[in-house]
Length: 205
Image (tube, rainbow, N blue to C red; front, side, top):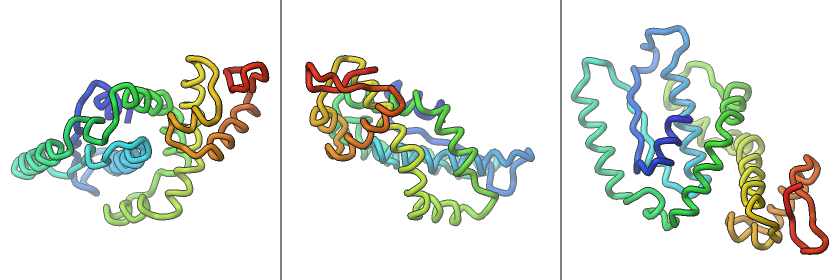
C-alpha cells in the first residue's frame, strides 16, 4: 500500500498491479490474496479522500498470458486518460491533493496493522472478496478503524499551521461541524489538541 500511495503522491494518474491467478501462488503466503485485500482497501481510501477508485486496478494472469497483460494495461490507460490528471479530474487543487495523500501515507503503518488484525480474509473466490468490501460490515469497520483515525490525523496536521475553529476545520476537510466536534473531543482525550480560550479556537496540545 505504501508503494501505491507513494506513486500517487508523485503525481502518477493511475496504478496497475499484475498478480498470479488466485489459488496459483507459488508461495504459501498467498500473496495474491493479500494483494487483492490491499487493493480493495486502498480503493476505499481513495474514494474516502475524494479520488476515483478506478485509478487503481489489479489483474490476475500467468507469466504466459502476455495478451491479458497487454489488454489489461491498454484498457486501464484508456480509462485513466478519461479520468484526467490526478486530483484535477476530481475537482481538487494541488494543495488539497497533497494534504490528503500525505495524511493517508502517514497512517499506512496503522492501516496495515488494522488490515492484518481485522480485515484479512481467508482464501476465497474473488467475487466473495468484492462482496465483503462492498458490505455494510466492511463499511462499519472502515469507519471505526480507518476513517475516524484518518480524520483525527488530518485535524492534527491542520493545527500544525496554527489554531482553527471547528467551522474552519469542517470547511477544509468537507466534514460536518458535528463530526469535527466528535473528532476534536476524541483528540482532546488523547491530549493531542486543546481548546484555546483566548482565541476561541483549537490548537495542538
